[in-house]
Length: 224
Image (cartoon, rainbow, N blue to C red; front, side):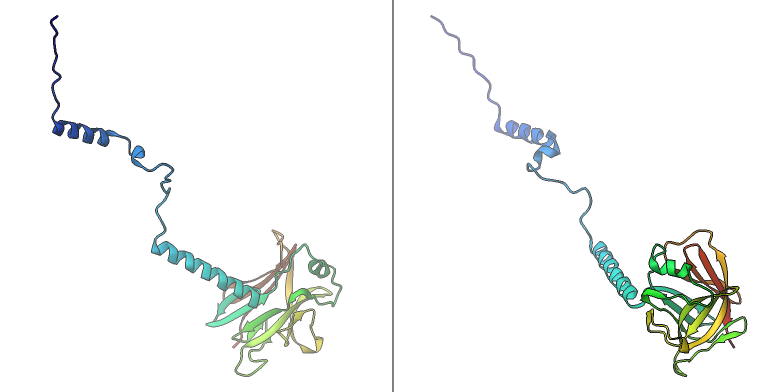
C-alpha cells in the first residue's frame, strides 16, 4: 500500500513572537488591569488642596471661637474709628421675643437667654445731639455699654447702660447713662432671630435692630 506524507511547513520562532506581540497590543486595556481594581474618578489630592482644607478647618475653628466669645457681631468704621456690637442668638419663636412684644410703657427689654447686647466704640457718638461718650469706663479705653430697647408712651428708645459685661437679665437701672429715641416701623420681611447691624449713611451711620416684625432705627455720627 502506498502512503502519502504531507509535510506542514514550520513557522519560524521570530514570526510567532511577532504575532504574540500584536495580539497583546490589540487586547483591551481593561483586560490588562488586575481583577477588582478601581480606577479613581478624580486625581488624588494635591498639596494645594490639602492646604486649602486645613485653612478651611482653621477658619471654621476661629469662627466657632469668635461666636462663643462674642456671639453675633455688627461692625463698622466711622471717621476712622471702629465700632462693634456683640449680641446673642435669640430666636423670634422664643419666650424672649414674646416678652419683648408684650412690653408695657416704660418697660425695658431683657435678653434673658443670653448675654447683654454690648457696644464697644472707639469714638463718642452723637444721636441727633445726644452724645454717648467715649471713655466712660476709663479715659484711655473705648466707650463700652450694654444696650436695652425701651417702650415709651410714643414709641421706642434705646438705653445705654454703663455695665456692659453682664447677662441679659442683670441690668441695673442705676447704671443707665444715656437714652436716645428709636424710630419704629414694621419690617418688610420678618426676621427669624434678633438681628443688629450698622447701615452706612453719610455723614454717619444708622443702627438697625430687627426682631420678628419689629424694626428699630437710630441715626448717629461720630461726635466732635
